[in-house]
Amino acid sequence: MSARQPRTLVLLTLNEIEGITALHDRIPYVCADEVFVVDGGSRDGTREFFIGHGIRVLDQKSKGRGEAFRLAVQEALHDHILFFSPDGNEDPADIPKLFDLLDEGADIAIARRFGPGAHNEEDDQTFRWRAWTNRAFTLAVNLVWNRGSYVYDTINGFRAFKRSSFEKLKVDGPGFVIEFQSTIRALKQGMKIREIPTYEGARIGGESTAKSLPTGVLFVRHFIRELLIGKRFSRGPDTGGSH
Ligand SMILES: Nc1nc2c(ncn2[C@@H]2O[C@H](COP(=O)(O)OP(=O)(O)O)[C@@H](O)[C@H]2O)c(=O)[nH]1
Ligand SMILES: [Mg+2]
Image (cartoon, rainbow, N blue to C red; front, side, top):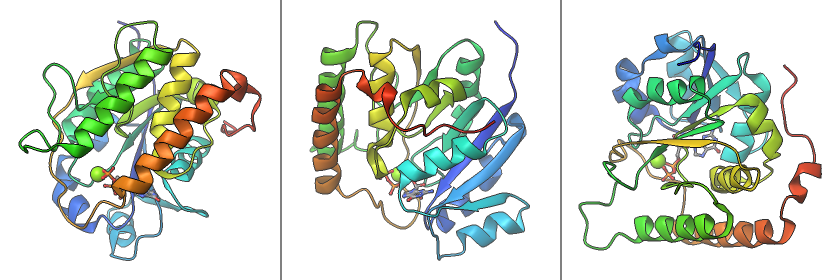
């Protein structure tokens, strides 16, 4: 196993006061060398919660998770960068495991909600619309772009990147498509994607802002765009950081 590299843990929030209040004591902050929050404009006390606990909060200038990812990579001091969303869906105990995969040589480490040993939010329901749609998108991506072993979750936001790998992807997608786009482009470049099975819990408070229909349409549009542009994204605008 290779040496442990310094780690940046990024928390992504938009009105997550109930989630962060419940999860704060379970987040293994000590496994990271730097921790900060990228906030999309919370008005429920989320920002104040972190500031009160001595955690730096960066405010986004424009909206959406896509922008949050790009800002975080620009600001991160270290080259191993993990994104955690404290809304209840993600298990904080997986944070060190994902960082470990980067130390072991992965370009991207993903907590997968599907496949052997994993659990997703809808597993106890009869109609699992969101899970089925997720799996269909993932199957399509694997069929078109993956020449290696199957990637079970091309979409989950609970993931970590090597800075240099993230920068090569030139991800420019808005909102909730950012993770999907990053997986597709990583497969196009033959990057090393490693996954760990995760247990996706229920949302703790508030509501998801990822509305199914508009998010689905966004995914289809970006899937088609990625088919059309092939590997030409590498000539796109530089979205990387300066460190
Ligand atoms: N920084 C930032 N975080 C966001 C934004 N939109 C959503 N989030 C966070 O991303 C996570 C996932 O969002 P959520 O609405 O639960 O989507 P879902 O998990 O896909 O249903 C939560 O922690 C949100 O607080 C945004 O625009 N900026
Ligand atoms: Mg969520």
